[in-house]
Length: 334
Length: 290
Image (cartoon, rainbow over all chains, first blue to last red; front, side, top):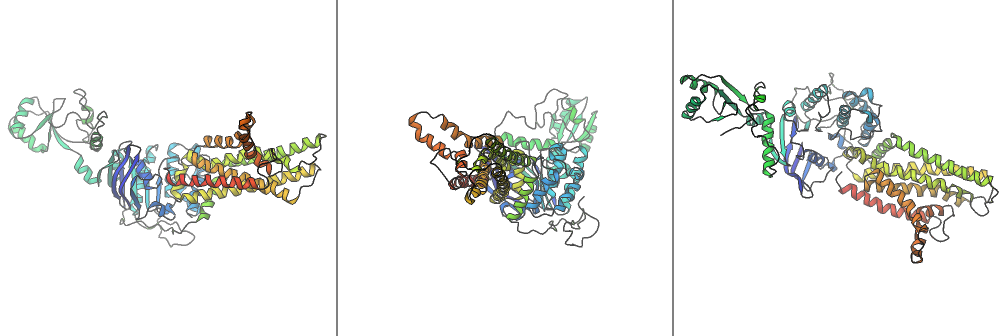
């Protein structure tokens, strides 16, 4: 269990983390999501007592990090790949960590085998690829068999097989009752691994919710209709009190109405339909929309938000073509 | 994966069996079978010893230092022996001086690298995550580095001294002379290395800290040489007397100037300066973000 209480970090005038309060619970994978520069890494460094908070506090199992005896047995962290001395062998890099926490040397070989680096244990970590460096960092995190594991962007640099491996590893570790805290800037990645979601933008807490709730609340579903009798269809919908938004490519988008009801309505008025489809906005979009709000809140209006302006009639086609997940990203709502 | 198939009889020889919770099992709080005990300074020292012995730069800097001490010490003894010049009242052991002065550059380099290389590689974050007590990390590094450089310098200067006295006649060095030329010099050089370690912790940049320390060793003497103005005479005198080469020479009773620190005094000076720098290094490590 990790508890953050009013955690704040300022670098000069810039607020990196702004009054962040949340809990990371055991037995599940908690995704820590935010765009680049949102303050994820700063928050993680403060959790490990590497950066001093300007105000607020972090408690690991009720204790401040510096009060932990043999911290590697409580919490293992992967902060950046290759936070190791390149001139030292993988084995020796882990051995010096093990010794400082009274972890038997046999455990070093064990974790190296576990992450698939057993064959290169005696090799200098300087020559490791980014993916191997990432695996070595994960081995270091697992060294003390800790109850809490923290991974900062763990899939960076991993090949598809490695990504698959780390996803399963995190799920298995969580199933053993451990607390898994993993940061990412990719919603799609989190959707596959995380049970719970903490979203930050500009250092502020934007959401602290279960993955299921996030999906339920944030994936907008709507119905798309296209007809050669567009004008009549619009009048009919209007007459029925249904708000329809026109997309750039001559279709209509209707929020909050079942496709069955809309189809029956059109049939009742004898309108020919070329398309009647149920659509769902992607989680990536929901995430971008959420974090864009934080950006706008701080008046950085230049940055491109979640809803880019329509760029021609065919722009949205790319998205709608993607099996059920995409939506017209053009003008939404009226 | 992490879950073995057989139930764990927790034999003391196998403390790392994973607990038996199936992947779909109840999600209670995970309890590791590894017992948590209070770690001490000894564990941190063991860790730092592994670090210092497992990088090539240690072997290189200390190897070069040993070679310099032996080569320069023996060459100067050989040169004196081959020439007709009499040693007269110059102590034989003082022929080791130039080797030690050059060798101290290696000790400075190693002292700086002991901590600054961790900042360069990012290892410092891993180190402090494993051992959050900044004072313990700093003390462990200092102890390991000091004992290593002290013993190597003491042994090498001893060997060089023995060879020099065997090659040349001259006045036989007394017990106190021997002590100062070996243990005294080794203590001084190792403490100078500790000062470099403290500077490395403050500067956090290898090249910058090494340059700074070499300047501290050489600059006062070089500056003093160019102070021709009579108004600077006092400053020139002080720089000559208290420059690090002069202090080192005092251990051989071969100081550049007749006044200035003599006997064991240089050691107290360098210890005082190092204590101040170490306090600064600790404050920096304790308060600054890593």
